[in-house]
Length: 239
View 1 (spheres, rainbow, N blue to C red):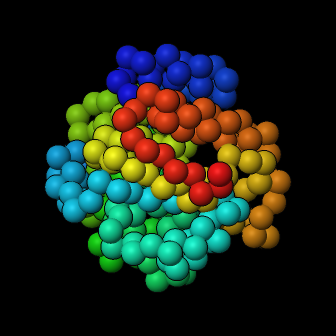
View 2: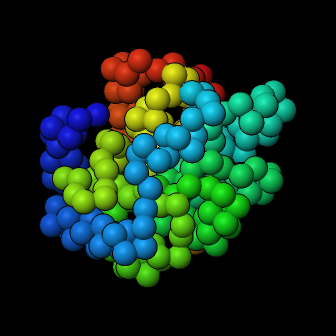
View 3: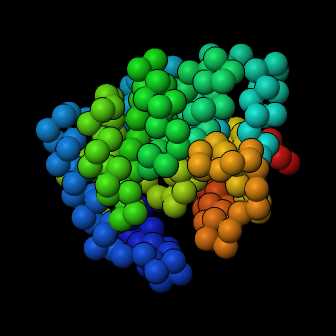
């Protein structure tokens, strides 16, 4: 999605959630400064790294995730796919001894597992926004092979492919990387939140609060936009 089109949605999101555009821009500037010092990937770099396949699997952190992971392990050769984990979904993959090729994260998931995936070869797509500026400041430099993204105007080393949550951002990224087929696993868009998504939960699954439900509605909206506007076959395992 071109930024000119994305910005129209972005303005709606800012108004709907009461976000600060200046906060997003401040976080983006910080991430860009860190990546300028530490080094980072470009989209071309990442395209070459995952160029072995144009078939992708995007793993979201919804309640169906673990069942979908087990089903995919049994019925597919995962080596034929580029595996993209959305933030906390990384934990479920590690539990099943699966190494993602890419992790899309705003650093809200289990950071130890995300770091472990990175050490095992996963490429990181770290997203900066106004609510995670402290994590961007303290955690970003611990990762290698990082591509940076923002939901505001892209600057410097940062990209904006579109998308609002880690899950649908992973989907937009996959399109930008040339995917012809994308399987969606654990992308529920429902009214539940899992411990994969929020590691501080005391139970595995609980009802989503209003904030999370609104985010999931936007995630579903942007996923539908891709299926309707991009030349890619999107297969949602929930359907």
